[in-house]
Length: 435
Image (cartoon, rainbow, N blue to C red; front, side, top):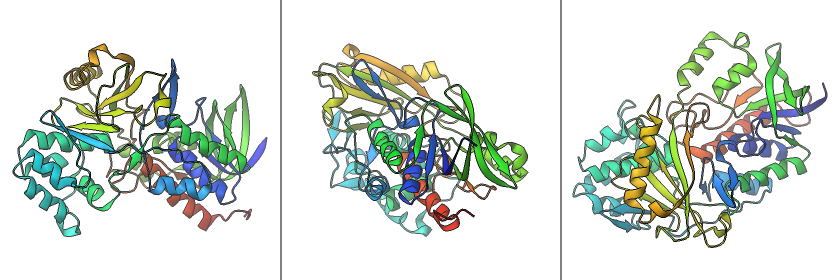
């Protein structure tokens, strides 16, 4: 062994870094191994001619588990909140529902708004939640056929869960919006989303840990039913690293490949195979010399082909673009969001929506068009169908958006799994105890 750590974390995405930061804070010497040359994974940022272009998650929830983690471990949390955070385009007008909530929004869309609000209120009790097999689209159809209402719900499902309302269980949607944070408070990092992950990486190394970039875990070493270390490719060499604990942020299916199927029972392998159903999104990053939307944060839509939202970064964080430029992203969820789809056709639907909805879009500079899917998805599992974070190997856990808690999503779900897993580790393998 060239070195030995208390814990190895595979992947420097949101789940991996949040886990490693918590472990470091609790006294575990932790190694994070990342195959890319930068931190953040599917929630990172790349520089494009002076524009800070996010490659996945674009907003970070504030006053929730993510910010709490940063404050607890002592890492800087530089996130600015737009006000209002989101506007809804209804009938050609951008509506601010801050303070009015669901009732105000739905009343703008349909005379059946009160019935829908009643259905949402009923969902606050277990008896009011629908059966698992009912989709969100079918639940909305019980109250109205109004296309704008269905569009709002579809785009909310896409924005939060990266699937359409036809693919998301109504029970998941209603649980999230009636019992969880519902992503009401969020903001942007002026360095791009990568800024907050760099803050965690600095905290980990300052605490005695290490973050190895451009390095890849080739396999996990298993002995007597436990992980004892990892084989890592780094700087053109193969190194063996020992560890008491391993945490994977690369998704359950990839974790199985690192461990080797021979070390895992058949029922678990079957569960991972069935649960490996990543979803997809398409994003167009664009910039303009002119301000193209009035929303200072996000603009969502009632009637579009595919477009879920447009985010406006530079009203809040002008540092994300060269002086005099405005930076935006428009994002859609394809049909279907799970499984195969025509990427070219779905991208054109998104472009058509942007041309229709954003005056001046034809004159904008397209920075990149990205289809996020398969091994690089917006979420590794559809909410409601996640695997548990534990594995049959006692000292190996998964974190991230493939093992989310019920009715959660995005980086917030990663922060939640990080806390749950670290709490288990602390209970079973106290820091400083070598047994």
